[in-house]
Amino acid sequence: MPKAVIKSKTGSVITIEGTKEELARILSDYDRMSAVQQIKTKVSEETKKKKDENKRRAASDLIIELREDDFFAKPKTLGEIAEALERIGYLYPTTTLSGVVIGLVQKKLLGRKKVDGKWVYGK
Image (cartoon, rainbow, N blue to C red; front, side):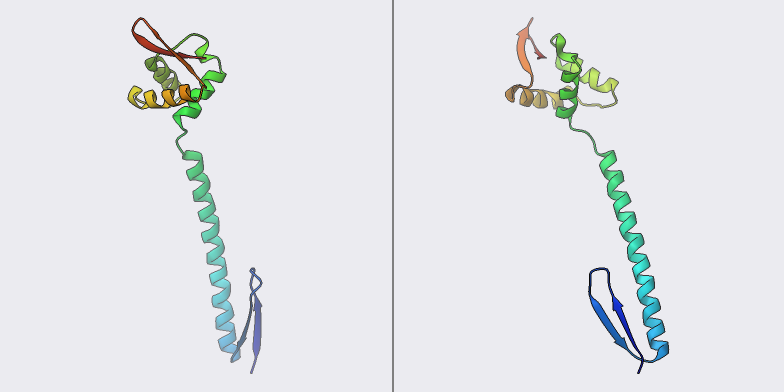
């Protein structure tokens, strides 16, 4: 009886015995399944890459970038920070930014003081 030996990419060795027709059918199915798996893997990798590219950037990272670009050379209000983020394409309500900015103050990445009854943030 004819034999076929298949060695997979993972190192597994499969031995198949049967008629020539059975072996041909099994090997054909195996090749087709391997091709389908390769396509699925490629699609999965491309999908993951697109998701990573489309991930929303964290507000704290964006604010730190603003700080590095000297945006905070003069103290800014939450509204001014929100407007600056909006100009670069990120919409965050000031209610969201307040917690983010307080976190950066606590980490000593930003300073905070009260001017004319309003909190302002700077270096």
